[in-house]
Length: 139
Length: 123
Image (tube, rainbow over all chains, first blue to last red; front, side, top):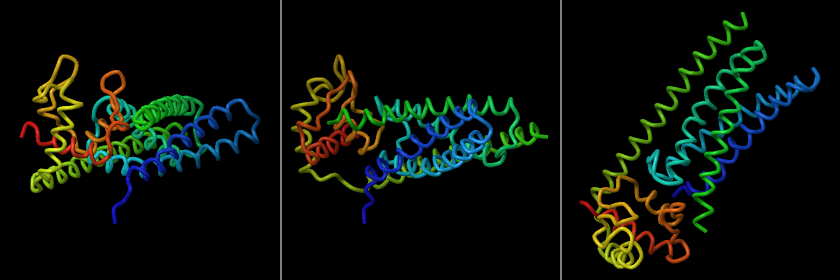
C-alpha cells in the first residue's frame, strides 16, 4: 500500500500552524484578562502548544517523505524550509520547556517565553505561507 | 527556585530539540541516500525518457538551453542535486518570478517523463 504523503502532509500541517498561533494568542490574551480567565487561558494555551508539537511531528515526517529527504530545495520550497526548520526547533523546545515548568514561571521567564512564542508563530506562519504558495500557484 | 527550574528546563528543552532536529536531518539524509541508491540500480524506461526529451525541447530548452546547460535567465540542469519528487513539484508549481507552472500544459505522466529525462542529464 502506498501512503499518499502529499495528502497526509496537507492534513497534518494545519494543526501545528493553527494551534501554535492559537496558543500564542491565548498566552498574550492571558496578560490582559482577570485572574480566573488568565488561568483558563494558560491551560488552553498549554494543551494547544503540546498538540501543535505532536502535530508537527507528523507534518515533518510526511514533508520529508514528499521531498524524498531533500531538506532545502529551491524557490518557494527553499523559503518554506528556511522558515520551517527554525519554527519546528523552537516549537519543540518551547513545548518541552512548558511541559517541565507548567505554571511555575517567573515574570522574566514569562516574557522571554512569550517573545519566543511570538517568534515561533511568525516563522511558522511564514513557512505556512510559502508552503501554500507551492501548492496554490501550481493551479 | 522558579528561576532555577526555568533555567534547568531551558537546558533540557534546548538539548532535546537539538537532538530531534539532528535526528530529523540525519534521518532525511539517510532516506535520501537510500532513494539515490535505488535510482542507481533502476534504469528509467527509455520510452518515458525519450518522451521527456521531446517535451523538454519544446518547453524547457528555450530557457534552460537545448543541452540543458543553462541560458541567460535559467540555470544549468546538468548537475541538479535535488530529488525527482522535488523536480516534479517545481515543474508543477513553477518558481515565482523565475519559472512558469506547467500543471495546466502537461499531464502528470508528461511531467513525470520530463523529470525522468532531466534526471538522466549530467550522468
